[in-house]
Picture 1 (cartoon, rainbow, N blue to C red):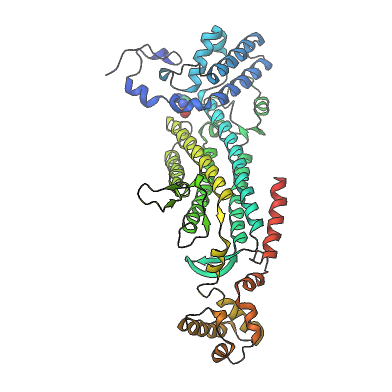
Picture 2: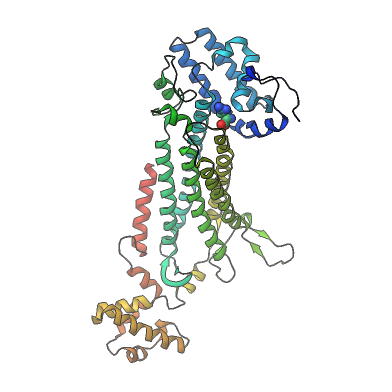
Length: 466
Ligand code: ARG
């Protein structure tokens, strides 16, 4: 099977013939790691700059190298660069082209460096940039949600547990629950950026190098806080990729929960929201239908992101130190998760921004299912001094009575309520409406509109600073 090609130009010294076609296919990563071209060139320019500064290479050679690398950058961006599978990956594709452009000086670039620290660097730079991008996108979604929350701080809707009507809450409060979730995602992104802010460049193959390199200098030039502290770990660590994927998976999971709620809310049975035409589709056979496809796809794409996390964890599991080729499998997972998450965030920001809220439907549903029963029990405790358990029991009887009459609790007469407990007075009706129920939940973090507005102010200030 082995097709006789020339041995690899970079490391082919000890090989008599070129790799078999299958070997080339399984070995090559250029199909996906070409995405790292800008990071690779940035890293190489910083490396060459340092090599010249420390007099490891001649300044003239460095100038040729930097000029050549910038030419390559322009070629790639113009779509004029020919990527070759034979050259395996982005690092060797660029280096080979550099040799074509500038001749022997190109051979000096790889002094005191290995593809192992090179790829660790490129990928880290990429993930760090992506985290900044994703954080910005997430801030857009948070802003869209805050606007909704402000508008609807007092709009009542049913709150659910077990997907059963539990107690009335406000839609603003519900929106703010997502702000909490997404803000945690944002803070996870910031934490991860902070942790990955160390440059592995200069770890070389695994053991460091005897050349008098200056790792502080390259770290600084590439925007890192400092260099990594252990050369072995530097080339074998992919925690930054795993952290990215776990943050993406948690964020996607949050998006999927919101997506599911949007799917439920937009059913004719609920009718809480109406999606704009731009984020729904019609049915080819049922003319009345408007399907929440974008929300369903956000829900589904979460599986893909979560899968990538498990995929890379499984690749890394049990790998001995330091670099193994297994680690080349890190990139597609991260690239696809990133692209997917970007799309999910954009779709969700669009949906949240332009869905119509049906306040009347929410209010109607808020009062169904005896949602203010807890308010009655609390009134019995507060006003009549009943122990909560007894109040719970009395309220249960009131609910049963209302149910038998097919009425809401607030529609029972005072006489009916007194048949359940003689101490009940007219005052009880003040707590049985959904509006009053919601207004009464003034505990810190509770659903009272005043409290919701307070939390909105808090987050606006906090995120404004972020
Ligand atoms: N394409 C490789 C990767 O992504 C680059 C590092 C190769 N290192 C090596 N020793 N073969 O992991």
